[in-house]
Length: 142
Image (cartoon, rainbow, N blue to C red; front, side, top):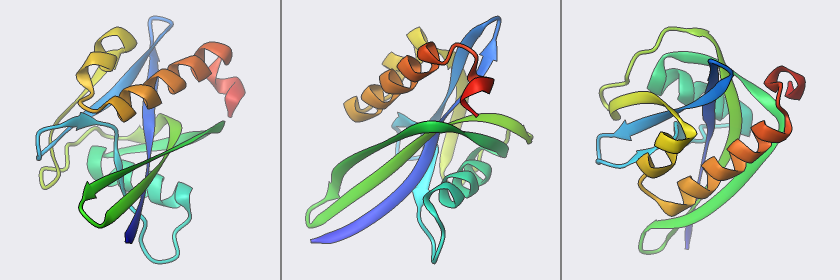
């Protein structure tokens, strides 16, 4: 069994005192969160930061205390583990990586949840939203 590992984040911003989540539309057609394969000796957070910057143009800060892992089989004989963090933008300029993405958009939870294609991504979004609710001031989670 071949094993692969990717890392990414549920990226959020606060607009009118409510979180909005960044969902991306992959060229393969599904909606999800920015993520990508670990390269060389990268840490999980280094991979997540790089992939988010490459795919969306955004520089983000990862919040302490949120890390979740999901696994699935993208093809026979392959198990893929994906580590997700929770992050907020701190710079950069939004720009879709055309090689990998068709589009990206910010959406409140009630629009982001049905937008994601896979149930495992919906579960990750639910966890992220619960985390933000407990940490009502996301700056405190840093």
